[in-house]
Image 1 (cartoon, helix red, strand yellow):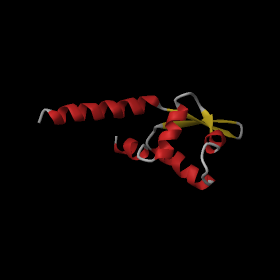
Image 2: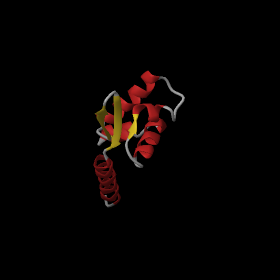
Image 3: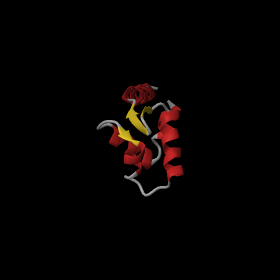
Length: 89
């Protein structure tokens, strides 16, 4: 769960997740949304992949990023459970 929240701690990665909620996007399409270098975008993609928030597929030379909503839902559920448990202490 820590990897998920660490990945979501940056505004760029949160925006990527938000865009991917509407469907898969290529790395190039996502990169066009930001004024960042390719290495910086690659680092953001790697952080999201490490947290398993996104998965990739390849179509020819194009890498498509897909949101892994189940990981996000699990992390949010765990957070709510933690919050509820903490308020009863």
